[in-house]
Length: 111
Image (cartoon, rainbow, N blue to C red; front, side, top):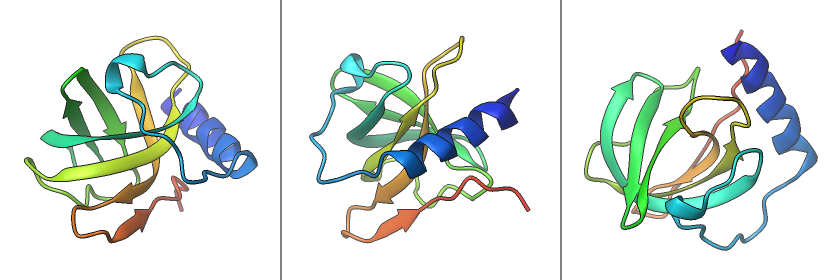
């Protein structure tokens, strides 16, 4: 099921390119939308997933099949697609901007 949503999110990401987007507070993130959020890496949940927190809430961020390129405590910005399925909110990251300004892009394609 997760593979289906990853594939769907990739297609939606390709169809709706991100521009210089406005930052969405985590408490205002809606399912099925493209968002840009910023916050602090709260903890690494798995090799390809972490929890991001800001002053308004938290969200799971999925970067698979890639490794998480940040550590707990890092301040980052993430743009991507919010899963529209059931369960906890999860953001499929498309681009992550690290504190030093470097950008990491994620394809979500499994070989």
